[in-house]
Image 1 (tube, helix red, strand yellow):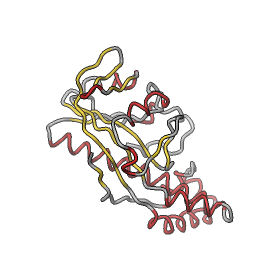
Image 2 (tube, one colour):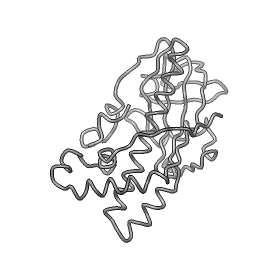
Image 3 (cartoon, one colour):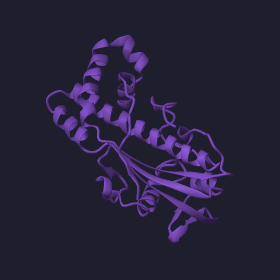
Length: 228
């Protein structure tokens, strides 16, 4: 399975603040000190970020009763899967991670400097999302080269694709340990700054849309409009 590690991630203090669940415009108006901490955290975080994307392109064999059958007998199932992937010719299944080094450092720093530790954690969140966005653009390019389109990325845990059923289905298609990812029985992944998703590719799929529309946190999230 292809593993790509040569990613250039564009990060700034605003993304770090959003990664902490804050509104950058509000923070910049109220506390330059927190902005400075975010900038310091980003400088410390950069050498600890080790981006890696493991992915696989899998042919779609058919859809029946909200169950998408893939080559080799694998499947993905759920309302969201049927809605967006039912007309796909193939799917790109991906795991993205920035590794464990930054997460471990943030945990260590948190004990003595909670503000910096939280900012480092925000760096990790921002980097993981930037990596996932870059991977999605890569799959969009692959689709365009074949005269196809790509759907929005679908992740287990979104509305219509429960984490407890979707994550095992997705992970069954990839060797997560190849990029150092372990999954708990709950579906949560370690390192925590990891993202799993699937994108449908084909001439008949509907391109565009917004992943936030299918997120359980969409009413309160300050990071909306920054996902692909």
